[in-house]
Amino acid sequence: MKNNCVNKLLKAFNFDIKLQKNNNFDDKIYQALGCSKKWIGNILPFEILGISLKESVDLISTLCEANVFYDFFPNIILTPNYGDNWGRLANYIEINNRSIANMNQNRTCCGIVNSIKLLPAIPPSAKSFANCIILSQIFPNIFGDGYNKAPDVENSLYGIKLNCGYSENIIDFSIEKNISQYDQLKAFNDLAHFRGIKTGFRTVISADQIKIFINNQEQNFNWENNEHLQIYIDEHVKLVKLGFEAIFVDSAKHIGGYDMTNYTGVGALPSYNTAQYIFHEIRSRSGCLSVAIVGEKTNDDFVRYENLGMSAGTDFIFGDDIEQVRFLSEKMKYNRQYAPGVTVENDNYEGGITYEQRLNRIQSALNGYNLASDKLPSFMQMNDLFALRYDTNTHHIMMSNPTYSSDDSSLSHIKNLFTKEDGRDYNHKVCELFAQALCR
Image (cartoon, rainbow, N blue to C red):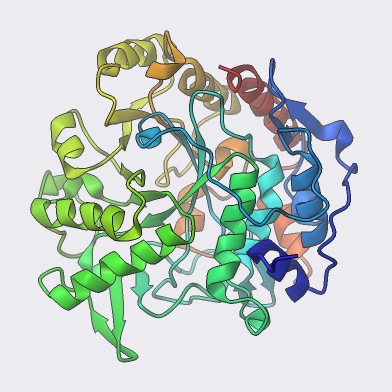
C-alpha cells in the first residue's frame, strides 16, 4: 500500500489506514435531488469537528459519490474536472481555518486537520459548476501566529509572512517528523478532491501587509525588488502544486493604483503589468493553467479584470433580488473567461444580515440563471453555512483570534464559536437549497 499523504496523516496520529464505514451520521445525510451527491447537514459544527481524524476520513469514504467504499484511501486522486475556466462559474466558500483550529490555553494549531473534519459537511460540486473552499490562512500571519488572544486584541490574517513555511495556526508541527507541513496540506486537498470539492486560499497584495524572509532575515516587502517578486510568485506556485486551484486576492480592485480613494489596505500595490505577470507566472510555473484568480471588490470595468487574468470578481451584486442576478447572468453569458460575482457575505461583514436574507441570497446565487452553464460565480463565508455566535462576525475573526472556550478545551471553543439550535435549523435550510441545485 503506497504511503500517500492521507495514509501518512493517519499514521502520524497512530491510526490504522484501513478504512471502516462510518454510519454514525446516517440520519444527517443530505443527498442532491436527482443524483448521488451527499454530505452531512442539520448539524452544529462541534458534532463533526469533535470526531477523530480517522472517523472523519472514514466518513468521507462512506459519502463517496460513486457509492463505492474504498478499504484504503486511493493513491491517485484527481481534482473534479470542470474545464480550464471552471473558476468563472464556481461557488467560493471561505472557511476561516484558523478560527476552527485547536485552541489549548493560549496556543492555536492544527487548523488543516480540523478543516479536513469539516469536509463532510460541505456540499460537493454540482454537475455543471464547482464548489470551491477558500482557506483564510495558509501563510503565517505577521503578529501572533500560533497564539490566540483576547477578543479585543488585533491578530489580523491580513498580514502574511512569505518564504518561511506555513502557519503554526494551521500546521501540526508536533507530527512533522512523520508527515511534512507540505504533505499535511496535500492530504487536505486530496480529501477535498475526493469529496468533489475544489480548494483555494486567500492572499494579499498590499506591500506593507507582507514580510519576506531571505536567509532567515525578515525584510519589508517591496514590489520593485525583483527578488521579492520572484519569491512571492514561487510561494504561491508551491501551494498550487500541492493541489490548491484558486487564489483569492485581497484588494484586487486597486491593482495599478485604481480607485485609491476607497483603498483600505496598507502599502504599495503591484502595477497592472506586474499583476498580469504574477498571475501568468503562477499558472505557467505550476503547470496548472486552470488556476482561478478571484479578485476582491471588482467593479463594472470587466475588461480590466479579464485582461489581468482573473476568473471572477466579488461584491459586484448581492443576491437580494434573484431577477437582478438572472439579468446579469444573461448579460455575461457570452464571456466564458471572467464574470462578476454574487456575494452572500464577504470577509468584511460585521453583522446585520438576518437568516432569511442570507438564505434568500444563497437561493439567488445558486439559481439566478436561465441555464446552469451561464451561472455567475458566487461568494460565501463559513458563516453562511454554519452561523457564528451573535457577539462575533466574519470580519472580527479575520482581525482577531479569540478563544471562546469556557474550560480551556478546544471542543468548548468550537461549541461556543457557533450558534446553538437555531444554527442547526439554519444549516438544515442551507442544505435544502444546495440539494435542489447540485444536479443541474
